[in-house]
Length: 185
Image 1 (tube, helix red, strand yellow):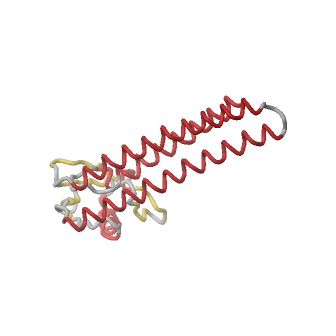
Image 2 (tube, one colour):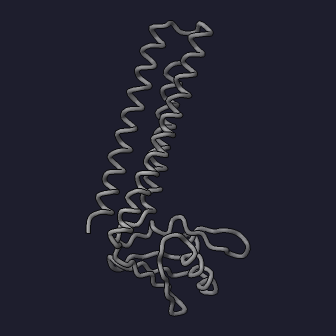
Image 3 (cartoon, rainbow, N blue to C red):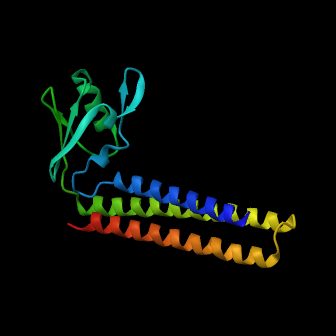
């Protein structure tokens, strides 16, 4: 029983780290990356579709992203979706390819993005703590139902805390790396 709880806890915390990695990839650093457009979805014949499912995305140079739609009739919709996203990008098209220049970040924008990274990291730390709480409650329930001894519960709670500390540390490392990327001129 304890091994199952610990295994499930590790898996859930690992998924939280993967989600954090995806979210951080979508935050601008001043360099072009196709992951900036991961959260942009386009109205494609009545349904919201991620931009990477409608077009080929490339980064031909460090300050430019190109979007080449497979269906050129969707160029206007893709441009509109990029404009209304909160990325602050201004796409331009020639009828076949959309070019998205990535402007240099101002110091004020860098600080704002660094705060956003901090908020995202804190949300994920909270998720990790909630997973820890769930695991601890399961262990306490096993103790109440007399399925495990107090010693077993004590050691399992320590193990859950160790797993939690490792994942929180990993979140801190990822957030620090992203903040350094953003602040770096």
